[in-house]
Image 1 (cartoon, helix red, strand yellow):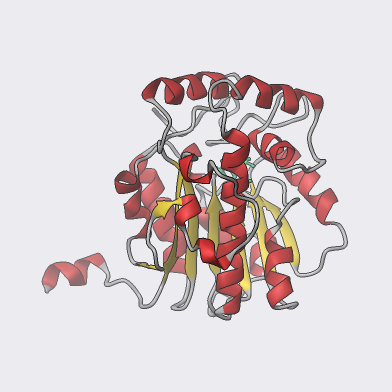
Image 2 (cartoon, rainbow, N blue to C red; image 1 turned 180 degrees about the vertical axis):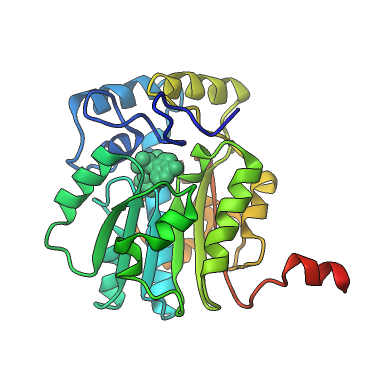
Length: 288
Ligand SMILES: C[S@@+](CC[C@H](N)C(=O)[O-])C[C@H]1O[C@@H](n2cnc3c(N)ncnc32)[C@H](O)[C@@H]1O
């Protein structure tokens, strides 16, 4: 299955964008109790409900993890964040969480979907320390040279790269590894990588297929990956405790609210990687 999944050649978008079709970003906003979505997004969420009945809990668990991870990194002194595949930064936004720890924290939000970017810009009007950039995360060189990114973030200092529910839209495993490695190589020691990825925890193969069939109606079929299949994106990083785990199991003691009794069952895995040293270049590793 290739990464490209929409008619006009844009990569891996969670739907082709625009107000005339539902989008995953707005479905997430709806399920989180936000206001940046339309009737057709609520209807699409209702269509997904019989396939993955715990989808609302899934999204809440994901964002509770995001809150814990961002706060944890901000408390360790990271004050720069690059959020890839942002969607709509509404409920539990990254800058709000980080700036509660450090009011000077900065967040560059990046999404490829023009309509999502317009909505995000409207929501973030007046927010300080943030930019919104329309760019394809699969083209790291474009993201890393975009004015909204270079003008806000200093890559000679630690940056936390976030990819929450965005990497399943890169369906080719080799491309996924290369893309994530390019962001790692742009970061200095002390940086971090925060990722949540769709992964069958309780979902059956039939549910995975049916989820893909419904998602295909808006132009995409996200990849599900087991934790083992996905672990390689953290190459070069040390995994913060407790490692790559079911999302609700990542440091629940840090206590960001938003998870209920079914939290352990949601179909995502998550981890925080810490860049504690520069990875040995491949050619030197071969010489050893
Ligand atoms: C499921 S939503 C998740 C949004 C948000 N990160 C969250 O966790 O709620 C996925 C987002 O990734 C964006 N996206 C998908 N493929 C992308 C790409 N190649 N480059 C940038 N953004 C992308 C979509 O437009 C969408 O907003």
